[in-house]
Amino acid sequence: MKYLSITKAEVFIAEALHANQVPLVDAQVVAQLMVKSDLVGADGHGIFRLPAYIKRIRAGGINLAPNIHIEREQGATALINGDNALGHLVMNKAVDIAIEKVKQHSVCWVGSHYGNHSGAASVYVRKLAEQGYIGIYMAVGNANHMAPWGGIDLLLSTNPIAIAVPSGDKPIVLLDIATTVAAYGKVKLAAQKGESIPDTWMIDRYGQPITDPQKSSEGSLLPIGGYKGYGLAVMIGLLAGALNNAAVGKGTIDFNAHHDLITNTGQTIIAVDPSAFGDKDLFTARVIALVEDLKASSKLPGVNQIRVPGDGAAKVMSERLQNGIPISTELQESLNNCAKECGIAALDL
Image (cartoon, rainbow, N blue to C red):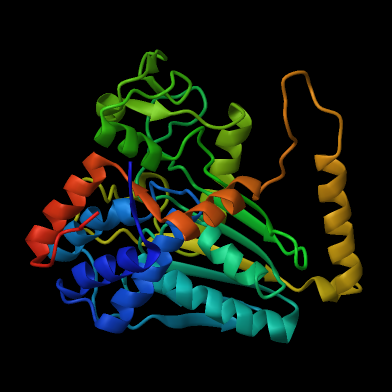
């Protein structure tokens, strides 16, 4: 496995986007946010996605001169119209607005529509937690990969949810999950590497496991926790999609298959100021106490440590800040093909 430094990754992505008429400032912002996905180990949402984004741009599926603006606003709420911009730009704007509103109202709810794929959910709630706020993110995925519980029609996406809770100078407690057993990006990664997938990820229309990721279009991703995960995906679809007048259900556009169509992706950011509920330092102390109690609790045989949400991402981030982003041979080939098409220098690893 080869490694790509964070700086080189950001420069490469920005150059590729800029070569395709993305304004340089926007290209740099998107590059930084894309790499933040890789930094926490969300490899299916970072630089891996660059060739797909370029395809959408070249097909005319992205507005490169968008007017990202607040379409509706009432008190502590806002609805952002992303004007079909690159998704990272839309969500970056949403977080900035959420920070302004949470300072004024102590809690806020910011929805968006006409966005696009924006990488790992954790990127956006982390930004809130780093400023001392609780962050919650929900989104409708950019393609339907899950059938309703007991059904076979693909009517739901992976519909992720992320929650970040600040804990002072300790690592952020952060949960970032798809409502399916695996994010579809992991299936795509496995397909690129020629690997099989676990038989617990997908089933075909007859309920039989799919282990060949090349056949993923023939089946459905399974929800986490059985019918409970299905129910959670439905509710996130309503809150991030239907509420925001964004695509959901049959209206969802598969951005993997239709690079030229507007996806109208719906996303939601909620920010909460802990000080609205009492002394902020005491809240932080309670967060830390729970984390320490969990980690110090008795373990099952063969278990080395108890982890809490965010531990894995923090460990990966520490390693990758030092060593860079791991790049497989297959990914390097894909990125270099992209570089050739864009007329920029290939990755030298």
